[in-house]
Length: 125
Ligand code: TYC
Image (cartoon, rainbow, N blue to C red; front, top):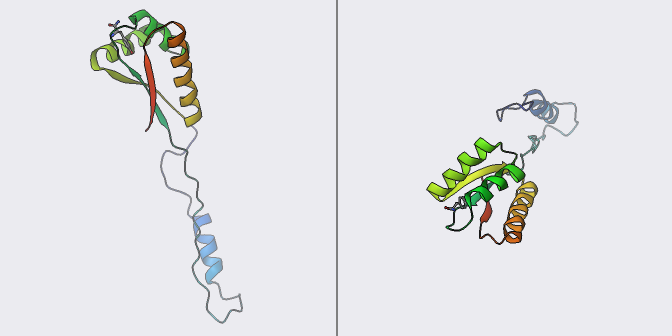
């Protein structure tokens, strides 16, 4: 991870405009005001991709889906498949909106092609 893991920002770029706005070199008769200075750098929202249980999709098909589309090894895929089977649903990955949409579409297409009722959805984290 290269990103700083907190919301703290360096103070200098925040304070510099304040200092500029309040200096007395501006010939405005002392009416300078504090201006909005904080750069808006919000991270894009992330989306959970969820796999839902059903009574008909074969376990080995779900394992194959998790290997193929979510880069899991066989043991990881089997474990997550069993979690979905027992609990009804599990998060199988967290992605940007575009990647999450693509994963959901890939899983739904693959399931339909094989005539399994497997359902995959996404929700904002
Ligand atoms: N419940 C299915 C079965 O018993 C297996 C299954 C697991 C189906 C996970 C969907 O997302 C799923 N064959």
